[in-house]
Amino acid sequence: MMQSGHIREFSVLAFGAETVRGCLFRRRGAQYSIIRHGVETVDSNDPAQAWKHLLRQLGRGRECPLFLTGALPKGIFFRFDSIELPPRARREALEMELSQRILTIPENHRLQFYAGAADAEGNVPVNVYVIPGSSLEHPAAMLTQAGGRADEFLYPLLAWRAGDPPVDLARLDPEFGFADGEWRPSPQNPDYGPWIRRFQSEFKLPVEGDFRVEDYFECLLAARLVVQPGFRQAERGLRLLPDQMRPRRYRNQLRITALLVILLAAVYIWSAAGGIRENYLAHRAAVAERDRIKRENTTLTSKLKASEKEQRELARVVNLKAGEPEVIEKLAMLTELLPSNAMVSSLRWSESSVDLMIQSEAENLDLPSLLRRVPYWKVGQLQQRRMGDTVTMITLKLVPNEEAEK
Image 1: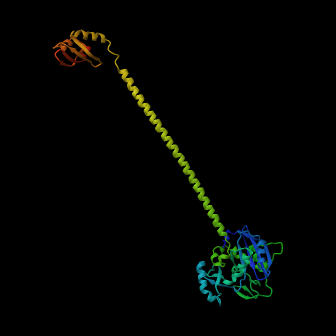
Image 2: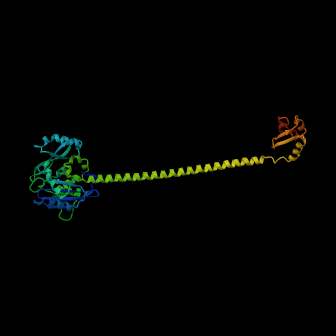
Image 3: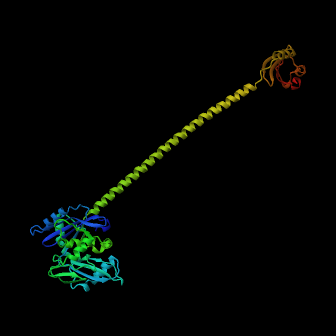
């Protein structure tokens, strides 16, 4: 069933044995207006054609709720006072009290009810309509052949409340009318004036054309129930039609919802993929920057090591002495000191020492005493070996005489 708080427009189709009539209501501001209306005569050979023509005449869309109304065969309507109960508990209580309210409970019965507002004493008026399950076969067949479905069936008198004028309508019951909460015989000439004024205050009725309240009485009563503020809360109690007769617009809404969920998931995945791609690109850029910095550090470290090595070489070269300026004079002095029978076979001259290898035929060559006359050196090391009977090998190391230099 549609919820009245979300109904912008709705249709009501009232059916009977001879005619079907209906109205399309649309909300304009705080009030509902009748946009289209029509009456079709039922052909006994093809009664579904009247339903089909009327539905087409009303021009309702697929999303526009359709409510059926009228009198179903062997239906029973009554009104009684109860207490405040939730809809589910009230339905269970009614099932238990049906035997006390009606003489015979219909076979395979179905019921619907609408509870009004509680009075000062806490009494809640409840309108109840009970039918046998077979009563729905005719409207179900007509809807199926007309290619339509209905949101709910609403018995017209469910909208009746205390203080309302009597309802005397032959299409509902040719012999009895409902007044002051009870059934009583209908007068010969019913007065529709009070209801006309009441409907004019509750709806915006057409002022032009052939519209008459008595022709659409059932439609207006059912619409009066639909526009009630408590219609949404009364949904569970009004449920009468089987699921096979209801529209499947919720299936389309579920499909749209599923599509929207898929689209939202796709958008989320796309956004997540974009974020992952951005993070991946940022990671790659960071890795590339890290590798570049590593290469630069390696290059700079290599250059620094080369520079340090070069600096050490330069420092070593700078610290080198320019050489010995008196080398010839010192060498000549050393040559004069050595005897004629001594031969220098090896000479290595450095800043810290002079190393000589001397061969001599003399058996006792006193080199230390000879070298005392040299002011530049002193004996650092001296070794003599006799090679055979004729040659003496002398290893001599002279070191600078620092006291002489000073």
